Length: 81
Image 1 (tube, one colour):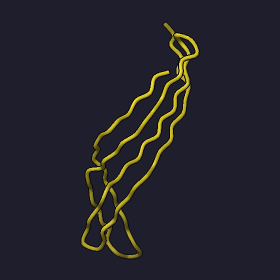
Image 2 (cartoon, helix red, strand yellow):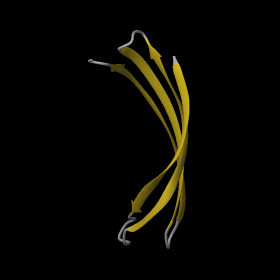
Image 3 (cartoon, one colour):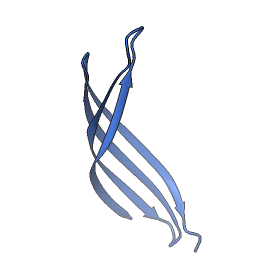
């Protein structure tokens, strides 16, 4: 079994339009962290899982918005060689 942690930043864009008002857009740096693991059944076959948490804050003329989201990934990897 292999387990690990991760941290990073990314650039995120957001746009919103309400009724007949003009569309407002904003972009921001998002910060994230996560953990994951991979369990090998054989040298070529493994299952994996990963969880990530991210945060970004957006500011326009009309609003300030803070978003947080959590993602969970699961999968199987198989080496052909």
